[in-house]
Structure formats: C-alpha cells, structure tokens
Image (cartoon, rainbow, N blue to C red):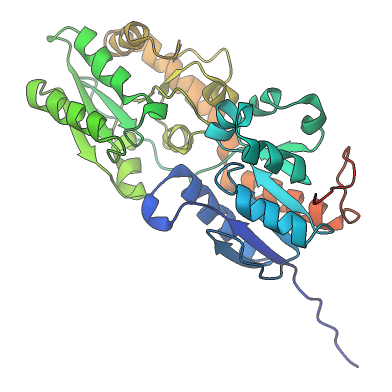
Length: 338
C-alpha cells in the first residue's frame, strides 16, 4: 500500500526587526514562529523576496508595506495576514499611504488588544481578529514591603514616555521609601542623557540600559509594581510578562493598555499625567490594601495571557485563512493587486 504524505503548507513570517533589536515586534515574531513550526513549513524574514509560500504573515503595516504590496501583486490568490502594531493603529494609519494600502491588501488583519479594532474603518473590522499575546508563567516572588520597588521596562523613545518616569519621581517626596529600576536601550540619545542625569542626582533611580528578555523579566518579578507610561501601544509584552510573573501594573489609560487590562483596572492614570502616576506610586507604597487590590486584579487577568491560548488562536487564524477561497475572507470582497 502506498502512503501519501500530505504536504505541509509553507508560511512566511515577515518582521522588519532583527533579533538584535530586542523589540516587542521581534519577540512576537519569534514566539509565533515557535507556535507555527510544528504544523507548517515556516520561514522568518525581514522582507519577502519572492520565495514561494502558501500564506504570508507580515508584522507592521507601514514598515512591511513593501513586502505586503509585492506579495499581493505576485500572489493575489494567496492569503495575506497583516498584524497591526501600536504605531500602525495609533499613528501611521491616519496619514501613511503605505500603511493604508497594507490594510486594503490584507485578507486578514490582526490586532493585539481588545480595543484595537475600534480604530479601524468599519469595513476593515469584518476581517480583523484579536490575538492576545502571551508569556510563560513565573512563580510570584514576594519582595519586602518597603522600599516599594518599581520596574520600568521599555526602550527610551517618545512612544514609551520615559520622561513621565523622571517627572513622576521628581514629584515624590524624598523620604518616601521607593526604588525605580529602568531597563531599555536609549533609542533617543536625549532621553538617555536624561536617564543618566536622573540617576546621578537621585539615588532612588537606576537605569540598567538594554537588558536581555530574561533579565528584564527578573527585574519585573523582583518589583512590587511595573510602571508602564506609554503613549502608544499595540499590546505591550512587558505588561503581559509582569502579569504572568504576578507583578501588578500601573499604566497609562490608552487603548493598548486598557485593551489588555480592562477599562476598570484600578492602576490606570491619564497618559502624560506625571502627577497622577506619582499619586498611584505613592499609594502603592503607603496603602497595603491598594497594593493587594492591584495584585488581585493581576491574578484574575493572568490566564488570558497563557501561551497555549495564544497558540490556539494563531493556528486557528492560519488554518482558517488557508481554507478560504482564493482572494477572499469572511466579510470581504476579492482582493485586487492593483
């Protein structure tokens, strides 16, 4: 009897960021590659060079716009999944024609927080899926009650608003027992200079520079809270990793954060409001009941970010896209490559 081996579909995953960038987008691509390799013949690239594949997944509508357009032109009958980042959703789609064209060419769109699709035109929402990112669980550590240890994890660039960290610290009384450990590369040199200056004159603040992911997770796990003041987020991996390690989050009230934490999460402050962030930090340092409330909220959220759950959602998306008739998706019209 002849055994027929079914060919595994070829999937290409395009991410504009290299491993050395240590960005959230790279970590998303690396994690998704692990999830998909068992089922598909997978390649991860920074661009699409015409290599044949049955499905293309592209992270970043603007930065991957060239690859998206070339694939749509060359393979109009094949599914094209575009994953929208925070800068796509909350900045570039409003003005960038390449990002807008990526939206139109995609057969499926993915957003990484529950509120992301609300930023899209109604016609695009019909082909949009929400996939929450994940992190492995870590055993919760119980740091000493004081000083309050605050972790900040994010590269020093305007979107992450590290300036709010410096401003919030300046608003906290010197006698408040508190330590801030800040990890992230100085992608903006001016912000790096501010971090060094803050560290020089305030012993409560320490900037660690860029850290490997495991060490950044250790930093969060040793903290009482993660301070996450971003102006723009698609669905921050640092927030998810903190929660999966049992560390509560104090975060800006932007869609990329509330789309993970919920709008009623107790540790939210208005974006850019250093005074409000300082008040929450002070409350966490002085009000044990408030800190317990944050921990309880974190505990309830943690199962949503389980890797098995993300893997199932991603594989279902890919399987569904591969089964669709050529050039169509649920609720969409046939794609044109023009």
